[in-house]
Image 1 (spheres, rainbow, N blue to C red):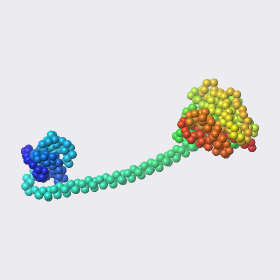
Image 2: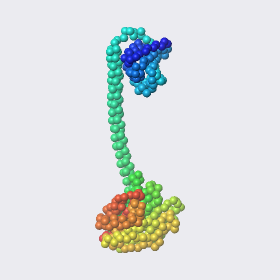
Image 3: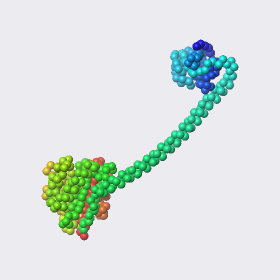
Length: 402
């Protein structure tokens, strides 16, 4: 492998020399153009300062590599980092390129003129740029087609998601309806209920109600708030309501039912904890009996607008010494409204005392509304701000006196 040397004093001379040796070794015109530009830029500072530049080149026939070296006095590192053709080696004052090449053709003396070679290089660079532009356009079209396909897939997935949500919601509504007791008819009473779960992923939680007419014509209502949320608490609440219904239909005294329910359930599930409120109403006389097990008090709103909470003492299911003491008695007059509820209604802002005050205001506001609208309207007013989400149940009873 023979190394050849040449001293160049001007940029034009250096470019001619690099172009000649590149053509002699049959480098592609586009590669040749990059090499010429790179050599001119690497030696530019030295040549402009009047310092000569040394050009060396050697061909290794075994490896098929052309090594081109450029010795330019000064630090070429900063310049070499931005050259059109990245060098293979950079030292202080020297830049080296190693390129795949053909053996020297020996036709350097027959080379076309500088203008012809420069034009050939320009055509090669333009052709490469055109090829890149065409490839970019092709990739852009493919990307647009892919994006269109992905968008269509997203639309399909979104539609499928909507269908699944609709089906899921329908299933939850059917399950919620299955947990509700059948509506009852009692001459002289109007009843309505509103239920709202803490989250949309479950149709119900631990808040349940039950109502039915006893053989003597009185109406029995059970309100249960089992500890927790979701299916587990629903199971506990169902166990409580079923036990209470059985005991009530067997004729047990109202004040004994909470304690007896605890006795029945404890051997099967010691983890059950629930607050309970029991109400008995005689539609004919308006007489009301309340038994309570750690549950929020019922709200009685008279037709004339006076309101008070009916505090019945007692402890809930799973509490120490469960059961209710002597039931609270009251007499309803035609037009009076009784509101039974769970703590999700009054504790949405974490302050139950403030919640009870707001509940009286909301009940006053809707006292003259149709009974079937009252529970939902009150719940909407109470839940304008929710700091503590919880299952909510509101049940309204109005004595009509008919």
